[in-house]
Image 1: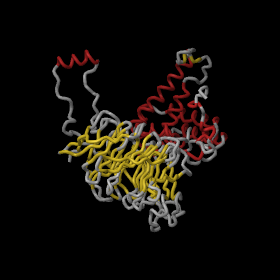
Image 2: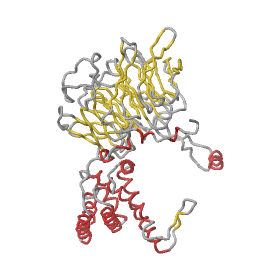
Image 3: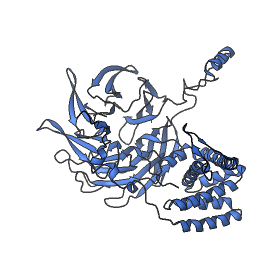
Image 4: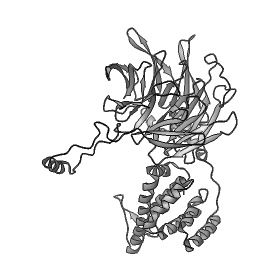
Length: 362
Length: 185
């Protein structure tokens, strides 16, 4: 099936998020968040969330409650709740002194985590008594900007990729909010701030994206050294069973999603989505989602000689080569699950610097 | 108050937890210490291979034993060895040789190391020996002295053709890895 392309505007999109029914699409645009409503096969601008006064870097819609959390370079986060008169924002003081870079709801939707340039991850939960969002900090041993965060399906463990080249797994357990998690491969007792794993590639590129596998028993991350690394932990305080680092010939990936336990989709600076398959014994790149001869992407139509010489005269070139042969016309910066149960992804969405949001069949 | 431009205050100096206050070595994987004399011995062994006509073995050996943990002198010695090997391989043999290395286990990493040496070699090719080089106010450096310019040019052309062939096989990924890797050659 051909991908569904929504060209929203000519600005970079830092992050996008669909509501659970896929009728609403939230995208970041400068210091605002734009909400698009589905009508037919298009998304039409419906509302704008204004409140941040610097570039918005992250947006996430909670699938069940419908609440939207956003974070920006102004070091704050807002939780937006739907009300009869529109969206009401609640300011969350993250207590950061550098920009917030990314934000994600936990699967339980009672907490969210925001990464920042202050080498801190703020894990925030709502205190009903004080009617206030409280932020707890994960600090050690992060040595540089946190570029991405991802929650484990149990809502306790949190993976973070950082510009110091490490991907780490932390415990984000908050007493009174979370239930005690069952012991698993990442650890048994998990008080807040426990470092359950710390992984580094040999070529040590800064990490762009992290993601837990659908079961939560493996962690994958993509880094700026054009690698995809998959970690299979064996148990608490033990060396992982397998750490598979796949070096590619491509430009670095920015983001990734797991399709199943043995398939990862990744995209980045090559403006294409790639498919990787493998298991504990090894991973390999199997191909791209771009098809040659996609409608609308064919070779330039035959031009008249007059037109050709006019182009040569005006622009000093024969062919118009300003368009890439890929669906995205610039770097893909974010990939999201769109449809399908965890572990059986059927559709995913991508957004990038070219202002497009594209929905693909996995 | 108005006299202080607070934007110019270095706040990291006032913060005990600032990123400038920790050891950068923790950001990269540990490397083994290698002394310059070890590098020298190795260079001798590799030259032996080279004299015996086993250029592939020499190149492989040199790349596998890149002295990340060595001092500046050891690194320079090894660079000279690698460049000597590269210059002794004919243009027509480059692609098949690179292909064989790439397809062997761990080959992609060896080509990344080769790419590091190519860039290191290019960084060094011109200033070597030509003391008369002086950066002009325009930002360009002028090379005087015919001999050095031609020698440098020839070395550069060898490196450039290796670079082209390596990118063909290992892709742009290997260039990106040279830029991110903290283990320098």
